[in-house]
Length: 192
Ligand code: IMP
Image (cartoon, rainbow, N blue to C red; front, side):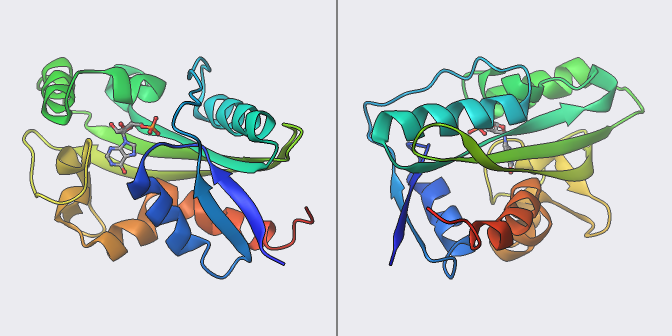
């Protein structure tokens, strides 16, 4: 029997990415209703992922999955963090602001974090997972793939920014990839 899992996002790109990870899990993914929106009022990625999964599950009466992610820069005390999406009005605006605030700081260490949560139809959280990918903030953008802060996030093991990597390589090392890799085996054992 196929089990239905509502994805707490309006972004078809995120749905496709999740579908690829959960292809053999026995769950069928569907986008949340467009009119249903959850405010991200939590102070941590995990709190926001749980909030979104729980509210979408309760509103639809189905199992729901949600993620929350962002960039934490060490020299900025973890900023922009949970405010990563709200740090500016466009990707280039957000990147410019980050580079301006970091200035010539020699400490360029940073990490992407992704928290994922799955809620039962009654809103109770059934599974949680978190993935982290460490890297460095460059002084200027490099690469044209990906989205968000990808062009300034450099991973020294690969000697590439996220925006220079293939989708497969980024997916295998990224914060989101790691969070989902941990979650998927547990998801297959869940009994609706
Ligand atoms: P949310 O998880 O959809 O709330 O978005 C978090 C924000 O963090 C995005 O709008 C991006 O600005 C940033 N972000 C999260 N993951 C990535 C990534 O893999 N690459 C670049 N930026 C990211």
